Amino acid sequence: MPGLSQKEKKIKLKALRVALILLEKYGQRINPQTVLKKANEIGCPKYFSKPISEATIKAPKTEEFKNIVNKIKNKKNTIAKFSKSKNTYLNSRLKNLKEKVENLTFITAQLLDENYNQDLLIKEQEQSLELLREEREFLLKN
Image 1 (cartoon, helix red, strand yellow):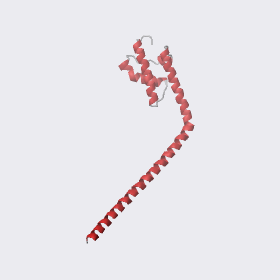
Image 2: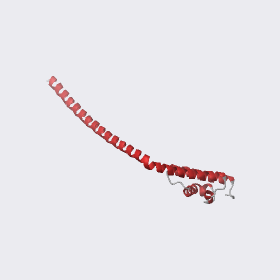
Image 3: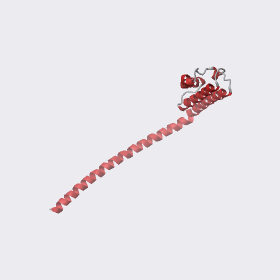
Image 4: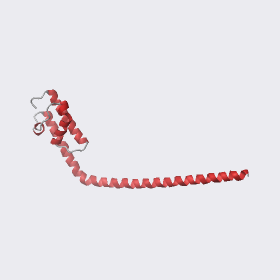
């Protein structure tokens, strides 16, 4: 980026970093093109006049841009490693956890149903007890 001022260069670097963080946060695909596109969406007309060119990511010249390109590659590699390990171990763990959640949900539903039935029984018994008290008081008065 030879013709840019130092301030605009810093803003473009920040836009690339923010784009990388946002893509990682929302679980979107991370590669140089997506980071570049997101960075241009973030800041092109508002914070810098010309969009970031593809050459800054394909063949970075300054050390800061080289660091960002390396971060993009590292994120891409870690995501690939995670998805490979996720396929075997994590899928079995997720399946087990889903089964546990389903079992606990069923047990909770049963307990709530039993609790509701017991509440109904208690209310019926209280009503019958109240009727018996009223009947007793009536008989005692007569």
